[in-house]
Image 1 (cartoon, rainbow, N blue to C red):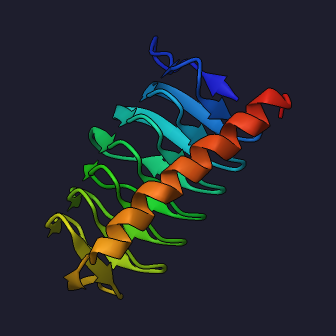
Image 2 (cartoon, helix red, strand yellow):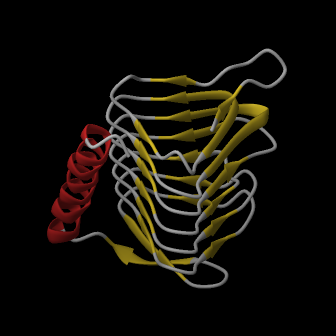
Length: 168
């Protein structure tokens, strides 16, 4: 379901797959070849939410913020994640059931491990591997992990196009 709020309508590129079971409302912009899966809620009523190209918002995610939220290109937001932060860079994997709190900023090429909680106003440097509650940097991405980040977003973009072609 896609809805206007306070005179602001979502702007969604024509190549985007949006599940009929997703809810997108307000000042939202979604870039080419991104995909929004069942149960996802993207609610932009306090600030604008910008989602880059080739980015996946998986099943049952919540994207909302007290201010603007920016999610980069080629990023995967895993199942059940709560994105209430300021910025997520490009080529990032946010694991299942991660919580990113107010004002947090995640650099490019990061992995945030499943179940992690990133505290308010935390800044995570690019190429970091982050895990835990509260989340802590545990290391830097390997070359193999960098390659896997790119492959993951490509797989989801192709899968989303299959769903779109089948009218789902």
